[in-house]
Image (cartoon, rainbow over all chains, first blue to last red):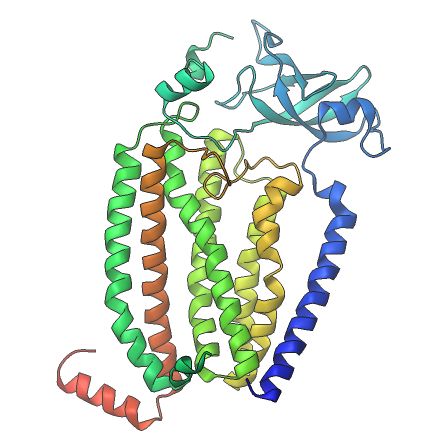
Length: 154
Length: 251
């Protein structure tokens, strides 16, 4: 490399490193705001000292607790508990649930926090993990019986 | 160490290289896409959770991964242009940009079409989706800035700077699903250790990725040939090339 090229290369690399660290610091500072949702534990115990307020509109993400789904026979309204590793939060929702919604599934709900760790949701989205496998293998590995949501019966 | 590359700084040699590489990329594209997509979309087993809807992975994942790979290639061309000041480096950069933008668009579009039935929404402003959208805008920025200058050497320099600054977005896209909580799930095939996709689903995906690489190469070479011909239209070798091909009745 000629000295001029070397000089240009170092200039480009220095500017690149400075920009990368600037953007890195910015993202680090914004860290909590980039998170899409609160976990149930964070609703109870706060997130780095910040407690979500009653009446605040927020997103919550967690796993639907087995056996906690209660449906109203006449309407679309449904209530279920969410948890991650700690305490539970109850979500109520009036609307059509996504196909992937089932007990044990990860979901993300948007709604307003009420007294007593209840969230009145107006949107429920289903999360799925990065594992893909045929139904027979899932039954063998995970003990998950493949049930179509329309035949799940809850 | 890279002196063997120097002849390709000349447009004529670069054009000839495009011509000779073209059939390989084209056959890889046709073979990979036909085998990978038919295998994936028809013969691979359905997913235990998502049923047949998961099959969109065979278009979504290749386009998303390669949108990032293509960006790195474009930025590398920009870096070479800035440091070594080769004309052909900027030409490659601007030939790659629209192809990368296309891949990014395909990944966003298929992602939306996948998100609606599975998650329940077309779009959500989570870190993965937003950073991928920024990638699309970075491609547009490079193309727009290049088009804004009439002196194409200046244009290449400005666009290369945007391209290099944007490289910071690539690790952000990749790690967004680990650093923050998102609706988008984690990486499947770039995950280290236990593969999280069954082998009979993974192989068609890998073939499809190879096909997409072929497709991107084909499109970039076509585009680069055009860029070279347009920029060098006044050169004797271009005139000679066009004359001989027009008398022979082919392009």
